Length: 165
Image 1 (cartoon, rainbow, N blue to C red):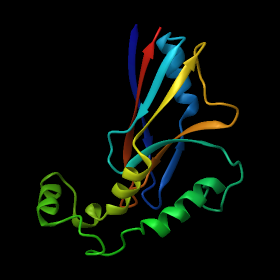
Image 2 (cartoon, helix red, strand yellow):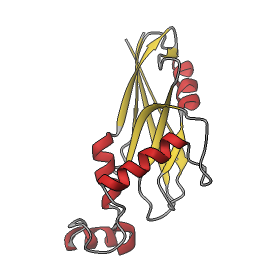
Image 3 (tube, one colour):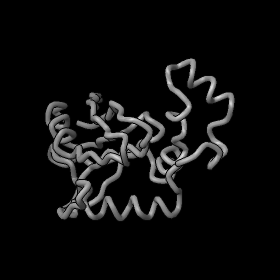
Image 4 (cartoon, rainbow, N blue to C red):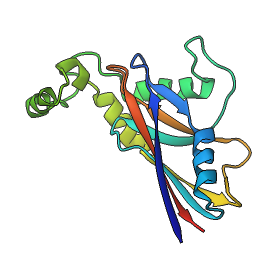
């Protein structure tokens, strides 16, 4: 049994949720690992980010989002509205605000409750079967890393761990 781990960075815009298609990079890591059959876990330790598998819808909006991504954002906006004003959500409270300040973030940067809730709903990882050294995503599947935090642009890490033979 072999275990291989690698990470890479993506850059979010901070203006709206940022969707990154990471399928190609993950496949490169699978090939580098030498594992032919097993599983590949794609994971985010960022609590306002998600990893999801979905098809590419090819068509894009004027903001650059694929139609399916825009549809997801629109649905999320109805379920979990973007945090636009202090007090819209209970989070962040005074203790978290102070903790964040001590770690270099200001109050507007902590008004990202919607990102936390959306990430909790979608999840922060996906596990993909590896068959013959390839991600078994089916005919239409792609891996997306989504940063739901809109408070500022951020560099995010995508974690990949491969287990198999």
